[in-house]
Amino acid sequence: MPQQQTLQKAVSFSGIGLHSGNRVNLTFTPAPPNSGLRFRRVDLDDKPELDARTDLVVDTQRSTTLGKGAVRIHTVEHVLAALAGAGVTNAVVELDANEPPIGDGSSREFVRLLREAGIVSQAEPADPLKLSAPIELQVGETQMAAFPHEGFKLTCTSVDKGGRFTQFYSLEVTPESWERELSNARTFGFLEEIEHLYRNGLIRGASLENAIIVRDDAVLTNEPLRYPEEFVRHKMLDIVGDLALIGRPLHAHVVAVKPSHHANTELAKAILAQSRKPLEAAQSFAPPPPEARQRVSRPESRNTHSNAAPVTTTTPSETIVRDGAVLDVNQVMQMLPHRPPFLMVDRVTRIAGNQITALKQVTMGEPFFAGHFPGHPIMPGVLQLEAIAQVAGILLMRQAENMGKLAYFMSAEDVKWRKPVRPGDSLVINVELTKTRGKICKAKGDCTVNGETVSEAQVTFMLVDR
Image 1 (tube, one colour):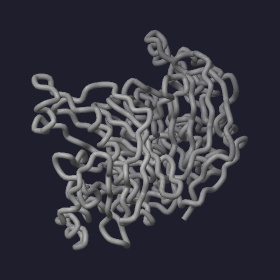
Image 2 (cartoon, rainbow, N blue to C red; image 1 turned 180 degrees about the vertical axis):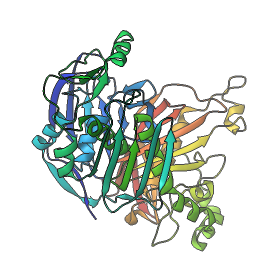
Image 3 (cartoon, rainbow, N blue to C red; image 1 turned 45 degrees about the vertical axis):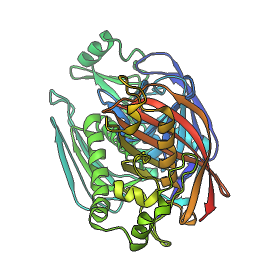
């Protein structure tokens, strides 16, 4: 199995943003194992980060945009293509604007940066995602399919609305073939579309320096075409970048006809959904182990002290807290000793490496609404902090050495409550384990409602034997 990879050192690049036309500074920095690819807005307060994940895609018109709350990062596909194409699984992309520099309209500058930084292997395996069955979907005029395959292969047909410049290309994608055959393919556009976009305040940074322009049947470019099929190869470059949102190397043969960013990201979501089905089915029909059922029924397991978050596991030899797992409330209670009304987790929806996402449905039946406040019910901020702590406690149990131990909530730092949470809200809790040293663990988390951050904090735990 291949190993995860990151960068040997930080490297930077400055250029023009495609849509704003302003100067943008980008820095690639190394990242720890299991942290994935992420973007960091260093120009904003608190330097918010956006993970390269399908659930953060908020717009796919002309490019792929990630968003969380008010934070946006546009045109991420060329950067992600360079990282994924080179086999980099963990890295942070720092930006001082809401879009990366466009470079020459391809991934060439980003590939150059990666060569300068150097790529190093990490101890953890990369664990490629393999399809269990074919997937097909149609989005408007776009047709996409993915088939089981031992490596990563792309087959693509590109054609514009007028039937001009139909091109076909197929490639077994490796780090070497990616750089040689796809990474230099530039973005292109048709003059009538470009004029419309410019009039609407977009592509202020577009020029023949960073795009190929087609006017009628003429191709306008400041240099000869880099490939005979440069248009379709750029479409394949976009597919590589958009499928990087899966968060793992993909083993599949992807076939695309008239691809688009929307269809690419929908295919990524479909692939992730298929990968979760076997785990969901197994967990749905498997009863808790006898040891877990006994622990749940014991009176001492009902400790609800707010300053301690003891956590137990199912058996000494295995845990249900693993990549791809989705835990219902019964499985959550196998991990946590908390019980209603102090259980702040209804469901775990995502586990990936050192990251976890959970859900709390906030209803009018919550007992704290009776006094907080009559006629103006608001969820107490400290209970949102408790939700972050409980979800972090679940994540700690994915490590075999932590199984059977208790996680005591020690401290919280950089706590911020930004917006009220009211009855009817779905509270999404995102937590990332950031540091483990001996018995001390640190994590950062946030709670969101409808994609907007309502609270956030960094928390510290101590692991103790039972």
